[in-house]
Amino acid sequence: MEYNGSSTEKAIPAGELDRRHVGQSVSFQPNDFTVVFGTIAGIARTEALVYLSLNGVAGGTHLKDEYDLPIDKNVYLQLDPLGSAEKGLSEAAGFVKDKLDEITRNTREREHDKSE
Image (tube, rainbow, N blue to C red; front, side):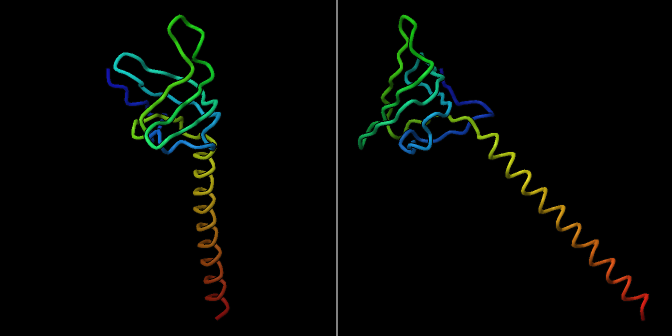
């Protein structure tokens, strides 16, 4: 099995995880047979490994809530819907401002042409 995340996730190497990622949804494939989906409860690291503690995973007969991953192993984080929406709104606001500036400029040019 080769898990590559979904279209609503972005891949990052486990070694890039830090405190900002605690509380975020994560998915990854720790071995050839398992895909894990959970919420990051804690992160620890050494030079070679990242240790993830997860909420929402343990409780089954063979499910665990702690994983050690090589620092170059890709994990998949949910894209931030609020950040994406904020960026989209900011771009739309810039577009509207540009159009209003253009309309204002055109109106002033017409008024200037009439007064001559």
